Each structure stands twice: as C-alpha cells, then as structure tokens.
Image (cartoon, rainbow, N blue to C red; front, side):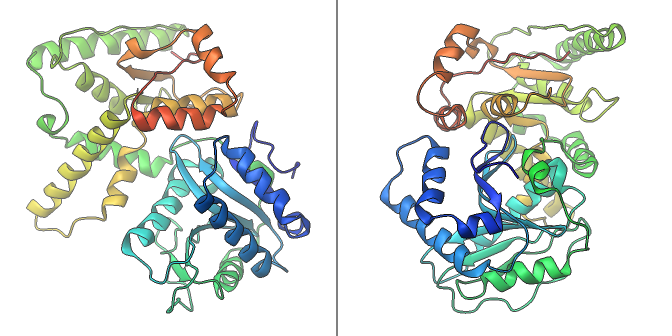
Length: 388
C-alpha cells in the first residue's frame, strides 16, 4: 500500500499494512486521524482513538493484512471505526470504548455497516464480511461466529478488549484463501450490487404515494411530465449526448415524485442507472423513512414478521442519496459516477464553480465540510462532470 493518509483516493483517515501500523508511533497514527478529520477534535474523540489504537496494537500482532481506520463507505456517509482486510476476509469493527453492555442499537449499527460494504462497495461484494462489535468492557463476548447469511455477511460477533483480536483471527481463518489487494480495496468505488438494485425496484414498485409526497397535480400531469423526461433520456442515450432538464411547479405539484419515479425506473436498467439526489438532509431522511415504514407496515398487514429496519433501509439507499456524499465521491475518484441519469432535487440550491471552489479552498477538508452541510440541510453542491 501507499503511505498512510493517501486521502486523495483512499476512503479512510488512516490506511496501512498491519505490520506498518504496528511499527508506527501511536502519536503518528493519531496525527493522521486528526488530520483526516479536518475538524477540531474534542477530548472524548481523541481518547476513544487512543484506546482503539492501543487495543489494535496489542491484538493484531501476527495478523497479515491491512488496516483502515475511520473508513468512509463511498456515497453513504457510513464511517466505520476500523476495517481489517486480510486473506479474503473483510472485518469491519465498531468500537464502543468503555461500554459494558452490547446494546441492540450498537449491534444493528455494526450489522448495517457490514451491509453497506456488501451492497454498495464494489470491492466487497464478492467477499465474506465479518462485522465485530467491540464493547471494550463487555462481560459476555461471543466465542464463535454464527452461520453467514446467503449474501456472505455474518451476523456481528460481540467482542471485548480481550477477545477482539481472536475475533479478527477467527474471521480470517473462516474466509477462503484468496488474498485481496488491500490498496485497490481501499480505493474501490461506490456501486450497488445487482441484488440490492432488484430489491430497491421491488420496494418502490409497491410505494404509497401519500407516504412520499402530496400531489395536487393529478395522475395525468405526473404521467405526462414523466413521459417527457423519459423521452429525453432515451434520445440522449441513443444519440450519446448530454441533456439537462428542469421540472418546475408549485409546492405539492409532484416534482419530487416525478424524480423518484424516474430514478427507480432506471435503477440498473439498460446501463442507464439513475439516482435521486438532494442537498436537503432532512428531506432525504424523510423520504427514506417513509418508504421504510410503508414497507414494514405492508409486511405486518400480510401477517409476516417484518424485516429489520436496517435491512429495509438498504433497499432505499441506491436511489435516494445525499448530494454532498455524491460530490465527495467525485472529488475522491477521477472515474465518472456509474449513474447516467442524475436527478437533483431543489436544484436552485446549486452553487456555481466559483463559489464551490471557494468552499473547497477552505482549511476544512471537503468531505467533512459536506458532512457538516448535509447535517444542517444547508448549502448545495456542484460537480465538474455530467452524465446524460
């Protein structure tokens, strides 16, 4: 691998072979973590990082692989405390420093991070994923892995400071012997798996319009607008040209619904692939949650035991995304996005090149500024590449 903190392309604050990590001074590693964040780090975060680094240095000797700290799953904003890539095993570790219990929310968080890697990180899709929840003071850790699900993701194993190293080693032993190029793994792009694309299409095909958007425009107007945009997309694809379409209307006219319908109709279809993007963080959350709740209620109405919320959210993520994470991925990689159709909600928020350049020239790293903006629903996004 290249030197730690090659953040122009890597998705982690710190990335290095484990042997290099073990030989590095603790303060050097912490410096990379603090520098990678680009923000003022409070004492609690610093102490958590110190404990994680100390614990990993104690438990990883003899492990032949690579370590990624503060790994950001492309596009999703899922920042994983640590990931070990060794043999063909991918081992994401969620640390809860000082915690004595294994809370259900923490367990689900570790599981969801593993699913994010499996479903949206191209280099992880063919690999077994072994998530670890490490409550450092946990009293009753697991002593073995459960059977994996059909997608190759194992249910999280519960570990503490004394057993986390063994959890990593046992995961590596269970994985097929097929070493992974860790540097390429760290640079791999966002790409939804075919399985999750099909699940997303099936979920949205059953959506409740009232759960997503109030529309006073009527079904006919929505159909005509959608059909017009579809014709432009088809023509652009056929003639290999780029096009930009503006859909206007009063609040409640159904603009968001038109965008969502188009996004799902082209989700992995005919290589056009589409994504619905918004700089309004709360809107993204509301739209996603509306679909999740609608699907869970539908499962209950059918007399079925509903899926875990995190599993349903996995289906929604491919076609409703935060525009800031989309931009960050464009800055991280020179490769064009996989989508040929990008729907921008509230496009009046977009900045021009000059204003975006001013933001990106600030001392704060672009990725962290975008996360700050996304968290407050402020500010828009700008791109240097278009795909029709």
